[in-house]
Amino acid sequence: MNLAYWAGSKPVVVLDLRGSYRRRTEHTIVEVAVNGEHFRAYLDTGCAASLISLKAAKRAGLTPGGTGVVPAAAIHGIGPRKVKTWIAQAKTFAIGTEQISNTRVRIGDFDLDGTEVVLGADFILAHHIYVANSQGLLYLTYNGGPVFAPPAERNEIPPTGESH
Image (cartoon, rainbow, N blue to C red; front, side, top):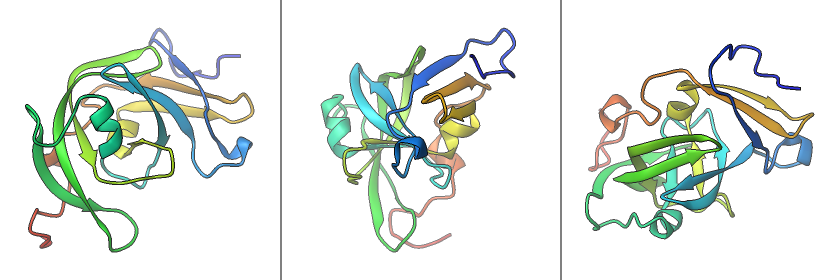
């Protein structure tokens, strides 16, 4: 049963959950692809900006110091550790049947035990999402606007580490 009751005529992306509370993991995990490389991604409403791990970015051909990859402000989540980041131009970012071409993505120097991408609030706010743990599925439609908000639109820590 399609639970995307809000969708109307909008295309609905239906994804298999790779992990969920139903399967006794801590996060809702789905598969995404960056430049054709597939990665495990988890949805995190507490993370303002979506991030691709440095290791995953390298597999997708996005390397700090590479063409079009520029340093960005350090960010942090819960706790004192700051994560060094870069902004890169991805040729493609796909989640199910939704594909975004030529989009700027944030790379972060982090490791999350096998999960290589964090889909943060920027991604989540651009979509209507329903997690159906009982079905092991995630339903998603695009709301409009930028999927990955430009860095200047987020409250970030400047590269010097000083707050503003």
